[in-house]
Amino acid sequence: MHQRQRQVFDRSPVEKLYDKHARDILRYIHRYIFSNEDTDDLLVEVFLAAIQSPTLPKLSMEEQFAWLQRVARNKVVDYQRRVTRYPEVALDEMLDSPFDADLITPEKAIVEREEVELLRAHLSVLPELQQQVLQLRFEDGLRTKEIASRLHKSDGAIRSLLLRSLNLLRDLYSTNGKERING
Image 1 (cartoon, rainbow, N blue to C red):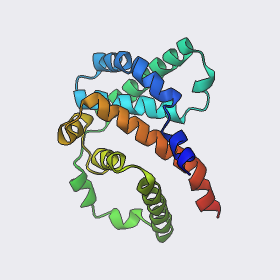
Image 2: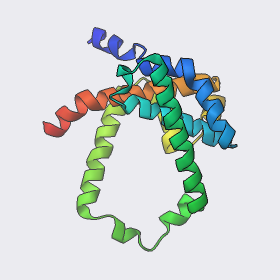
Image 3: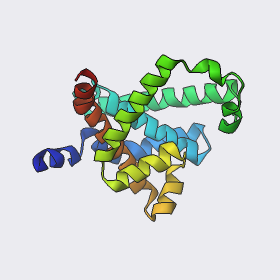
Image 4: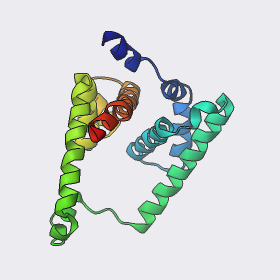
């Protein structure tokens, strides 16, 4: 068990890519998007796509960087489309919609509850700091700089921890998630 746990915490190739190219990718994104928080979010999305890509490890270092740049460009374009097409609406306003009852069927509710249970099970395996960072980012909606301030850590450390946490969750889903769903 201890050896398996140690293997999970080894640095992944994506983390190495992050350390090497995150600054350049962030600079590229920031050229087109002026909000620091949004650029940070898009950077996380780029490296989340890298984590999920089955082909990225097969590419050469130059091709990997080009792949990251292409994904960053696509994320910037998607962001700009989203911002121009859809005005921001506060989440509270959406939750008060009279159409909410029509959106959730009993089947969807059961599936959603099972997914939440599976996520909670996977989260409980993570170290407490990783759980806290994921909660602050995705449940509380805080930006990486806000999380860094709360936890008295650097923004880069929080981004790296967030990336490692998501990578570990992905590994847990790919190994344990299938067993639980099938079993």
